Image (tube, rainbow, N blue to C red; front, top):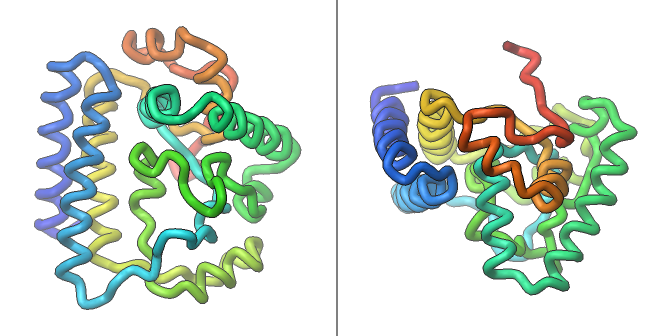
Length: 229
C-alpha cells in the first residue's frame, strides 16, 4: 500500500476510534465511516480516466457470496426497521431463510462458486443501498461483459472482473482502517455470512448488547474463517 492509501487508512482509523469511543455504539460510527468512504470514492472515480460500468439495474454482483461484520448487520437491521415496510422486510427475511437453507448444504468452495441472489435484491435494485456493507460499496467493475460471464459461469474462477485500480486501493484502505478501529476498540471483528447473520439479528435482540460488551455477537450465524490466517 503506497503512502496515499496508507494515509487514507490511518486517517479513517483515527476518526473511527474517536467516534466509537465517544458514541459507544457501532451504528453511528459506521454511518459516518460510510459517508467518508462514499465521498473519497466518488472523488477517486471523478479523477480516474477509467469509469465504472456499474449502473442501476445491473445485478450480476448481487449473486456473489457476501460476507459482513457484526456492526454492518446491526446497521442494516436499523435501516430496515426505519425505512422498509413490514411486507418488504418479511420478503427479504424469507429470501434470506431460503438462502441459508441452501448454504447449509454447500461447502465454502461450493458456496463461493454458486450463484445465490442477495436477499436485498428486489426488482434488480438494492433495497438497502444506503446501508449496504463495505464489500458491496467497494465493487466498481470496468466491464459489464466480465460480470455477465462470471455470473453465467460462477465456478470458473479464471474469469477476471477488472476493477478501477485507484478506487479499489482506496476502498481497501478505508474499510481496513475502520475494521482496525473496531478490533482495537475491543469489539467483535469476526466475519459472518450475510444471510444467516441477517436472520439471527432479527431473531435475537441481545446481539447488540453482546457486541457492545466485546463478546462474539452472533451465536448461530455462519462464521467465515480466513484460511490464510
